[in-house]
Image 1 (tube, rainbow, N blue to C red):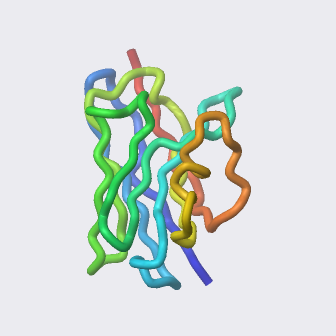
Image 2: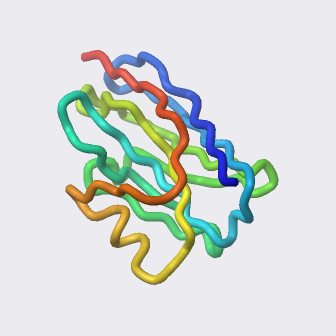
Length: 131
């Protein structure tokens, strides 16, 4: 059984930084894609970034490119999301999720407006950016 535990959220001023962690267990990381998603109040959940376990390739939503960095520590089975230059519009509950690596999976889970209703999800961690 795949289990994910997200942590690291908090309250930060605009321009500040936070690092989220997603500790995974129950699967082999090379066979999976790990993604970070967020859901702001009154909005749908959106893909923020993901990393492919087999080769470490990364993908980012346009809204976070150049500010957020996703990385993984395979020894610890943990995926991180370093968030710099935070903006009030980054305020949301952030979730991590795991998906079996398959053709087209990145395009599917990162498609803007797509509500991803499959995969294994961790609990959310709140990120609040004050202006």
